[in-house]
Length: 349
Image 1 (cartoon, rainbow, N blue to C red):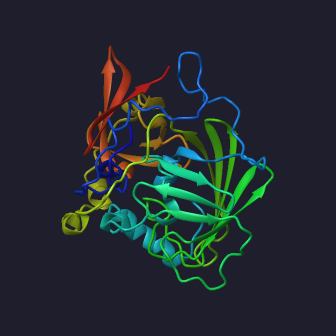
Image 2: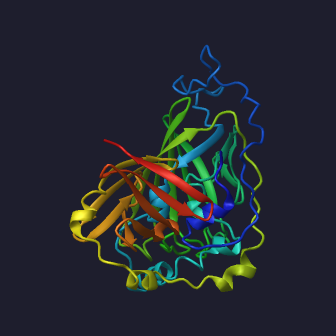
Image 3: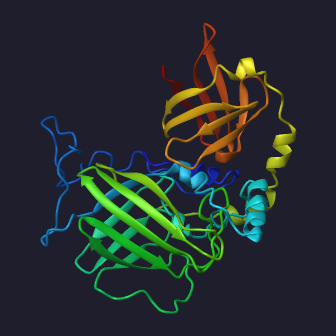
């Protein structure tokens, strides 16, 4: 299923009210035409990647980017002091001023959280990228250069080219209103983003994204993610309408939760590290001194879990909480509670 708009905004680490509907149970009985299938009718995602008439890999299809970790913390690259201060303010306010809370476009981070799909449509002279909650992008492949003095926009201006079997997209002309992640990393209008898509087989692509913004960051940085084909489902409309009238009620602060933290003995924390598998990927838990850390498995570094008791921890990175469950003295799983409900992660041996 697709994750609803409400949960996506919880990744902004705020509780908001919105009207995007989950895509679950719509078109579930209509198989995607023209894809390879095994004898039992299941999609064969390891089949060779299709190619266009001119021999290039065909990137068309519905995809999900496995980048939740980066979406919650895209980089630790040093920033100028003003940007560091702005990041701290956004983080301490639980991201309540994220443009997406006001139903505005996602900009460079569109779809990298993997909580909604992205459709690519490849034609001879332009590639379209369609999202559920952001405006579509046009990536021109007709040889035109990037604009010299673009009017700043939410999704930027893009041109594409082929480097062997890798599709390379250069984008400039962003406005500075969007955030690079839900954590609050800023960017300026000088941002130049380069994406490199390489389809390795029918069901999988590798994606690298390089962010070059010399007015904010000490050096360019690159993130690497996998992209997976989504068969037998479709892209659906997801409209955000109601956030603005509820924004004034978003008053939580990370510092308040930090002050409310309790002290958990290291002997108790020692039971929690390990690898956990759940509905939104594999997460790794570790202990750093007296603190429990959670790594979301696909980059982005480690996030704090703030203890409220020996078994209950707040998890500001996703705007929820987790509770550990034991059986016969051994931790078996934890339950993450967010506005959408409870989700289980099982500890692996």
